[in-house]
Length: 114
Length: 115
Image 1 (tube, rainbow over the protein chains, first blue to last red):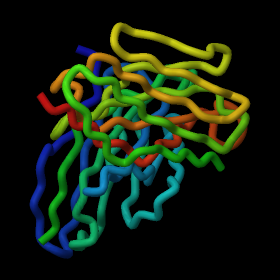
Image 2 (tube, rainbow over the protein chains, first blue to last red; image 1 turned 180 degrees about the vertical axis):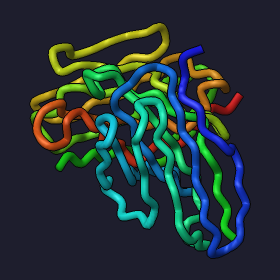
Image 3 (cartoon, one colour; image 1 turned 60 degrees about the horizontal axis):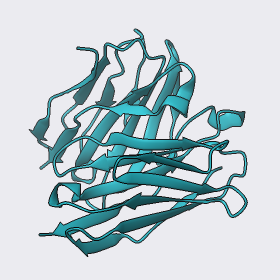
């Protein structure tokens, strides 16, 4: 089934560890996004990509980095995790015509850094 | 850039009542306004959207209205049911310019429907 998949769903990791959150979509979408969702609900855009080899920083400053080597894959990496990185991370993708067709979100990764 | 304000932040209603959530946006060039529902522990899902050439759109118990002059749009849920309890997000986008269709989300509204 065409969808967007995130792994892992839950991750508990120690301070200083390097982590990669995976996001893959099978819908052939060009545009992909990473959002950080805090306990107060708000969705904060941290990275986005309009296609292969295109990545941009979002509205919320983040110490994470992203890459887009393949259309279907948009991983997010934290080189050295800290407790302040504890949050839910949501990946999304949209049609080539952009947000006129809305986003499809993944199920999210809930990250806890201890 | 675009700024979207959403009110109220929490809304509590009795089953069968109507619920209304309002959003305002700042960029007059925005022309696409979707609404997302996020149930507890689940992903946000698109429930309805409206484009700037339409003033109102309905889908069963939910409707969205758009006032381009005033730059605000609203979600209306009639005959609410407990399964409507969730967080609702509005959003706006402008396909042109530097935003290139990127959605700007409101702050979210926690809707609770009491049986």
